[in-house]
Each structure stands twice: as structure tokens, then as C-alpha cells.
Length: 183
Image (cartoon, rainbow, N blue to C red):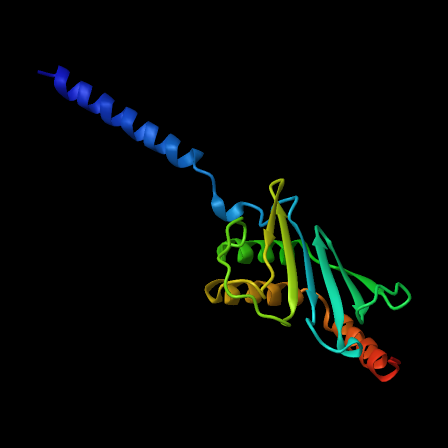
């Protein structure tokens, strides 16, 4: 008769010990670092599309761990004397937040719906790299409208990481190019 209560008590003690062990071995997720994928980087290229040469320009944003670069080229020609490049710093948190945003928007994929090409529209190129893989996102000028808004918003998030002083300088350089343009 005493045997059943003893077995029950021992079973309860073992169960309590096991559950305590499970509780103690669960990771505390709040203490995990907010680091992004170590190899996350991107290249984003944008051009004005079909415009007269004096109003045309291209810029490229390159982002990687801790660093960014904006490359700007006015006009259609690849005149390296007009090319301007400037480096800037991108914090680990900014890269983490950008990665999380792009991931939440399902940007790390290879299949994209394409629509009717928009002739003369701005051209874009966006290449994302993470986990040793490369993801090429088609130009917004050929994406279906269901994809366009998502990619355009992602590009705006990337643009936002370039300091405003750099955008102001690029705009000044473009205005000077337009004012001094000779056909």
C-alpha cells in the first residue's frame, strides 16, 4: 500500500526536476545580440531614364558591414572626370535594421512578377547578398505593379542610409552640370 504513494512522490519529484532543468536551459532571447547577417551587403543603382543628356544622371549606393559609398555620374557619357564618389559610415544597427526590413518584405528571393515595361522610366538595379547567396531584383521599370511598391519602398530605405549632406552635394553637382552643359 505504501509503495504506490512512494512511487507517486518519486515520480513527481523527478518531473519537477526535469521541468526545472528545461526552464534553466531555455535561452534568454532578450539577451541575444542584434547583429545582422555577417555577409549582408548590397548594390543599388539608379538612373533617371530617358532624358536630355544635361538632365540625366546615375548613382550607385554600395553598402556593406560598417561602410557605405555613393557613386554619382552626370550625363550619359562615362566621363570619369565628372564621376564623384564619397564614402560614409553605416552602423551595425542600421545594417541590421535594413536587413530585417528587407527580409520582412520578402526581398531575398529570385522569383519576381514582371509587368508591362515602362519605356523611358528610371532604371534600377538592386543586388542583395546574404548567407553566401546573391539576389537580383529586376528594375522597377519592368516589375508588375504588385511588386513595384515593395521594391520602391525598399529602395527608399536604402537611400535613407546615405547622409543628407551627401545628397545635397550630389544635387549641387547636378545643378552645376546642367548649368554648364554644352552640346
